[in-house]
Length: 267
Figure (tube, rainbow, N blue to C red):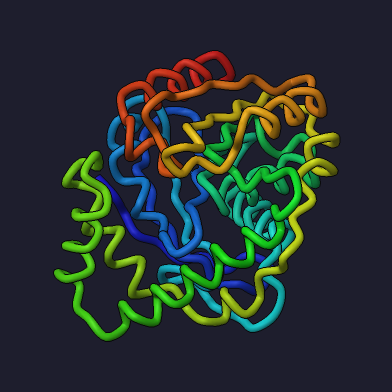
């Protein structure tokens, strides 16, 4: 089903996979240390309805990994250049975690380029210690990446299965591959500040914020979700019980139901 491609967008080589077909384009942005292939299960479920396109972000997968800025705004600009390079006409877009930040930056800073967007547990943090937690989380991820460099693909898959018993078996191959591909330039270039409130205030298109349970590892808590809803009149919120940060992987069927209905309304 997948076909691999490379394209140069604003000087950056971006690797991507595409399902093809006659449906409207749907561009999905993956999370930190993932790659485009990590959308395999959702893309398979939506391939009969949409032309699903999943790029590797800079520093990830098989895309270029330049030194420098890896902020949400830079990644959002990359995604805008990618959409323009493929001559996509107002695609639907969506993203998870870092990819949700990227998607938010895209729809905020490039109004009119996307038709609608969903955000799966973006990094919307509030309260004292929020920035410190972002720094700690990134440091843990970097150390995990370095540790995984010493083991093989099968052992990384085994780690993933042990830590994520709710995930379907199809998730782990791409997930493990992605962990072996992410480059250190990414970790060096990610800033500590993400002004999600400022970006939300600029959003004009329909948007869906999908959140899990903070007690299970979800990032967006009720306070942050309420703030997001206040800042963005076009925003809907869908809470998926029983899911942590990886909402679509933890609770695939309810995630597909919520996101599929949103995409159908706005496609």
